[in-house]
Length: 257
Image (cartoon, rainbow, N blue to C red; front, side):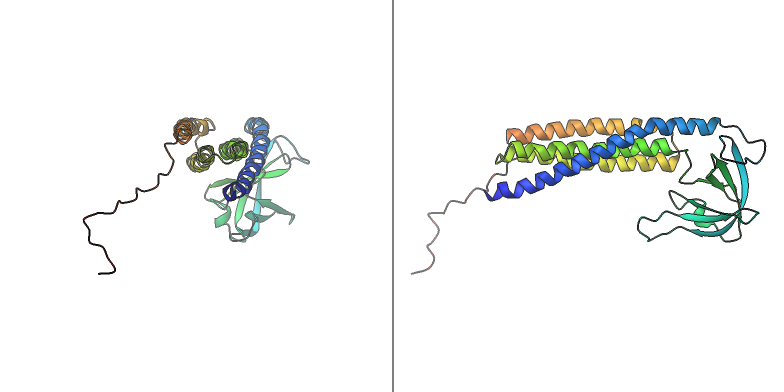
């Protein structure tokens, strides 16, 4: 009875985590197509013939002076940001997804070039020619959405299955172990997905590289999970009690003489 009451809260927790992450996965997956269309529109946009008077679909390079830049390291839920000044003195505040390679090196008074598209600074280029997308930049956003969807799916689906399974097979240790196998394979696959996204982002590989790397690992994980689940259901993973040594009749009795 005690094992059942202990397993139920844990299974419910895994179930809730699975539902939440799967909802996030679906939401991110639905954003991939829109992100791809926006990135294609940006790459195909022509250069503006003159300074756009209002938000425009053409691209305009504008010189700014850095007033302040802060990576916000150590601050929770705070993105790197910079305050840029136009020659007229008008201030533009931009945020970035990460600290490098440009915003972390910016100093007050430094000149930078901002790429303006649809009324937003989507990219900043420093004097050394290094470029960095701002939070409004469309380049790389499809990979972020796809990667986030795969990450949440890799963890969420096994967590959901592994959370529901013990609730329908209460008191069955073999089914409980099989459910645990499913859950922890999901955790391992999520870690592999993180490394996949890191490799793709740090090397600047195209979007299809995410699926090309993640796919084989997902198949290996599925094969491993299936094998361990079958072993758990067969009882191959049951813990056997150690054999009790039999007393040696030839051994002298201890205690009273």
